[in-house]
Image 1 (cartoon, rainbow, N blue to C red):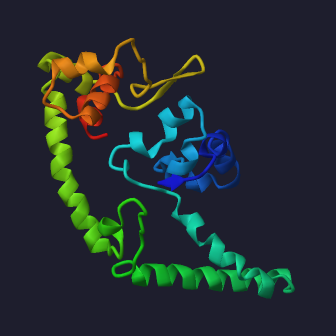
Image 2: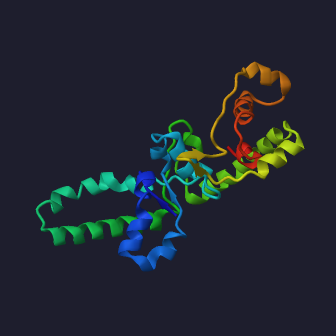
Image 3: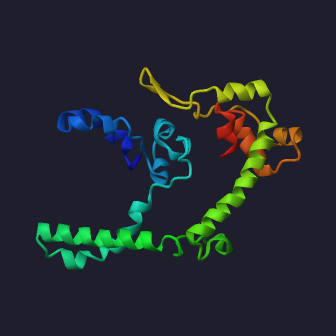
Amino acid sequence: MISYDIWCQYSVNLAKQILKQFPGMMDVLFRIHGTIPKMHINNHIASCKAQWAFNYLPYSGETWGENIEGGWAEQNQSAGSTKEMNDGHRHDTLDDFWGYWNWTKTHRMGNYSLIHCVNCPDLYKGATLKRMYLTCIKTLTTRHQNFEALTALHPEDLIKQWEAMDMKPKKVNGEVLSIYETHVKQGTLPDYRVQCPELTILTFSITVICQNIAIPCSERAGS
């Protein structure tokens, strides 16, 4: 898997260039799935999101894809000592810098404070990778319950229809067709609140959206 800020543009002629420059690598290219990192995808058009968003890629929905840029602030400090070097020396020095950065990050991954959330300091302050994993496991139960509650709102034949849909986007006459494309109809939140009063307001909001999006039930409830 490759994530790149402008994969939608970079991938257009990628196969043609690989075939021209590295024909022996074509089999590898066909096994690669390109994506756009989660922060950058927000600035792309809807067709880009349908094709390249992590959220719509099976088994990759929680991938962030932006961490490679997290070390740039530290890298900037190397400018003073490398700007006077020749090209080769500077290249080697920056390679050493990033090699040490990656080694340190990997070494501390299990016991270093990777996340600090201003709005939830008690949950993430000083969180280790293990604690983050355990927190994720706890929320999995809630997500499963929400999934079952949302599933119960729809007839079984409709759920089977959703599950049979192809999740892979397609281009038809230059237009990207995806089951994740939204088609919002007229309606108000109170209308849905009356139908199912036992659910929370947040769940109602999700229900309003899901009833107007042609996506599989498994993808709806996991959002």
